[in-house]
Amino acid sequence: MQNNIFKNLFGANKQNEKQFSVKIFEKIISEIKAETTNPCIKIRIKSPTTSIFGSKIGGLPYIPHNEIIPVDLRGLQMKLLAQINFEEIHNFQYLPSYGIIQFFLSTNRLFGLNTEEPAKQVGFCIKYYKYIDKTVTMDEIKHKIVTTENSNRTRFPLKKESFSLDFLIDKDFISANDFRFEELFISKVKTYCPKYNIESLFDLSQEQRNTIFSIFSGSGSKICGFPRFAQHDPRESAEKNLKEFDTLLLQLDSDNENIDWGDSGVGNFFINKKNLINHDFSNILYNWDCF
Image (tube, rainbow, N blue to C red; front, side, top):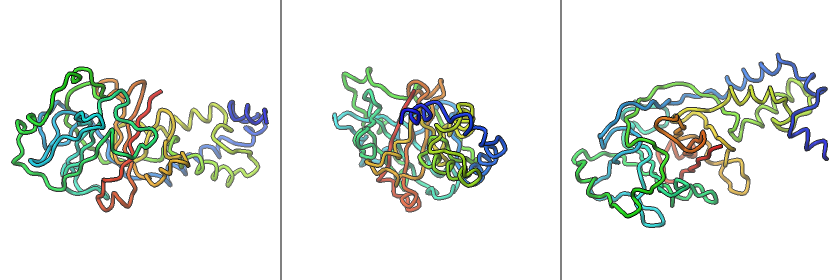
């Protein structure tokens, strides 16, 4: 029992390592890349913007005439984290071809995160407007903002007020922290090296683990693709039943200049693939973590 604990903490024994050749290790990495590669949209932050209709992080959101800014459980208005105008993405896979989706967060110390029920929209809010009313004005939205005594003491992951976004169609493969990665990796090891005793990634050497997490990092701000986590994938928790959220909808990664989730942190929003195909954004999983 004790030997197994130390093996899991510090990697496999020397005999086990010798059975696992560099050639097989590289073959497995190459196969996982090829089998999991999917299109994604890389996000690039551009210049400051004041547009209420365009894609951006932060700033004033588009709010239709008859709508209000979302509020949290304290009754305080949430802030816009990101707004994506789908017309600027040009018919990417299952995303809508038009309309605006918005990601709002509470400005409490946890950025609206609910660790017990991370899909319950009380500290965050997702809005999707299929049609955009261009008669809405910036002054109209400004009048909807309520200033409170705590307005200057809010906590938010954006370091600057508002920036427009650029989108680049790219490819992405599974990340090592994705809850599906370990099972996939182990199955391939057992296929090519059945005598190798492996039950988790911690049965690999430290060097091998470092290589895996470097190659399969999942880093960067993106739409779709695969996520990065500073800690672990919340979807792997069996008791919370979150594996239905199988598709990354949006990831905003810390960049030390515009976005800061804490110590090398990252924020993710997940959706079920069928809901994405149906353009149903009512059930979303929100998570962020840092080192």
